[in-house]
Amino acid sequence: MARIERAIVIGGGIGGLTAAAALHRRGVRVTVLERAGSLEPVGAAISLAPNALRGLDVIGLGDDVRALSAWQGDGGLRAPGGRWLSRTSAAAATERFGGPLVLLHRATLVGHLAALLPSDAVRTAADARLLDPGVPGDSGRPARVGTPDGELEADLVVAADGIHSAVRRVLFPGHPGPVYAGFTTWRVVIPLPGVEFASHETWGRGRIWGTHPLKDGRVYAYAAAVAPAGEHAPDDERAELLRLYGDWHTPVPDVLAAARPEDVLRHDVHHITEPLPAYHHGRVALVGDAAHAMPPTLGQGGNQAIEDAITLAHHAGDLSAYTAARLPRTTGIARRAVKVARLNLMTNRVGVAVRDNAVAALSKAGPALFLRGFDSIAGWRPPQQSYASQHTTQSNG
Picture (tube, rainbow, N blue to C red):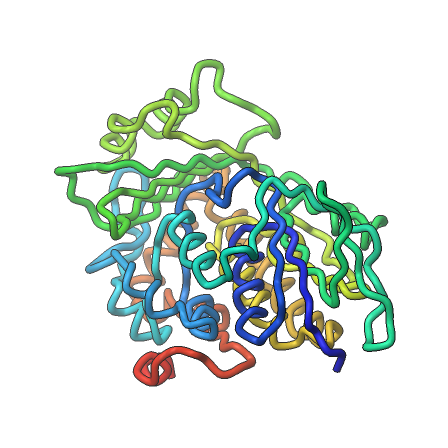
């Protein structure tokens, strides 16, 4: 295995910062190059499942994030009129998967990750471009990255530059890249005092909605709907949400009444349908959306980026082993996310009725059956020893 002493991470999002923290833990000198003027992410909340939390254990952050879990009691899947299609609970999920599902604001997670790095490791307003992927091996040539302040060389470059990754286009110029997934999403994080509700996701006809509490007292709500690419509301996106979801069950109207137009973020969903031939080339490795952008319907985009980052730090001197560990798993999860999107955004009226009845019947057979499909995802374990406490290691066993 080649020695890795110097690494450059392109992109200061969750995948990039996790990779930087994991490499720093292993004694690698790391520089993170973030194009934006700050690390404050554009986005809302992120759901972290036990697989990602075990990855964060490796860098000593898992227990801190678990403490941010706000989901207590029952929750589940509903129909727009309010009927429960399935019920589960935080306790059932924790027992089955060996740990909680934690929902937190992306900015909170980014702050925790950045705090693990030396103060001079992150450079913002640093638009980076890959000049040479380099040749691996101790006798090979380093990778070269161009920045506004000049060129940098490294033994390893981590490309965490997102779904429209410029590095991916350089490494694999013949790859078609991401395509429109057929639906758009909205996200809102707001205070909602005085409104009690159970954590839920609601499936309608070509539309979904979710409402979940955050530890800081705010509420995270998201929506998705089948729509043409590039479409925007003629007035504002809050008004569009009122038109689409205003007559759905409580607390959906309460969220929309409390939200301001500027609180609503809208983004079309793009994903990579044709898997890359590899997640590395030369001394460069792709992580997160740059490697395998997927629909958000399994809530695994950020989770898989964390898995990538931890696995990459373990295999930093042998990138072929990184690809071998990550490409099959992420390809399978991405395909499952596409299938789930087809199911929960179904537009055929008869199909929706059949779907809802099938989900309700499955739920009546027992919550364990409904959760079982997530086992292979949530059960992932990192390829290296955790830095977490013995208590956490045992509780996840």
